[in-house]
Image 1 (cartoon, rainbow, N blue to C red):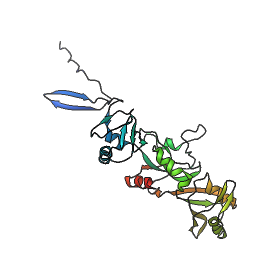
Image 2 (cartoon, helix red, strand yellow):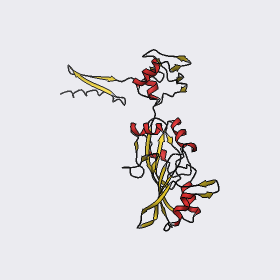
Image 3 (cartoon, one colour):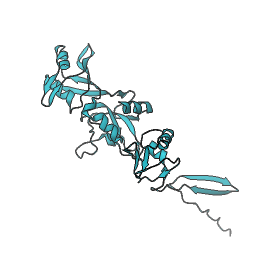
Image 4 (cartoon, rainbow, N blue to C red):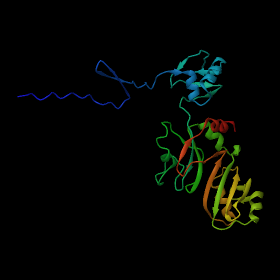
Length: 273
């Protein structure tokens, strides 16, 4: 009686990345080791990850004595630091976290707060999984306003672009419940008085002379619901409000709810404002 062939033993699969090599009929598995959280990294990489500049430029800043680690000036090339070290460039405290910048075409009925137990959906849910870093909206759009919304973890840029004194330009398309009176163009340009002060639009015009209930608005104010409140003060109900431009960044090529990372050129432009 023949004995049954011995079952070949199978090796367990691994969820970590593995490299398989073949030689002399043997199968070797090399498991990549996870980097420890407290592993040191080069100082120039730390500075580059903080979004200040490239690694090559960081080397120049280090050589010039503009960088300190835990209060000590470092000029040594190749110097390594821990994520927990206190690094400063030109007196500014840096964070080793990689800076993330993206633009979304915000859909209707989504909120720009990070968490809202009463909301059906937040913009943070729409970008879930895009990166490991924690990003937040740059400013706010109300629930029913659609269009350009920037998200980032660059706190300094958020503070800069949302500060009232900065007067960042925004462009909106508003669809109204009735035709917009031509006499109201001058009213909006000269200024309207609201409960929180006067407001004037920079420019306003019809999108199309055939659809006089649609107007395009250019404005610098960042006050809460300023476009809706101003138009309501003139007797109009805003049916749809779409932001098509925020400080030169548009939603071109993005469908509602879609997003993309900003280009290096766009990031550089925003930082120069």
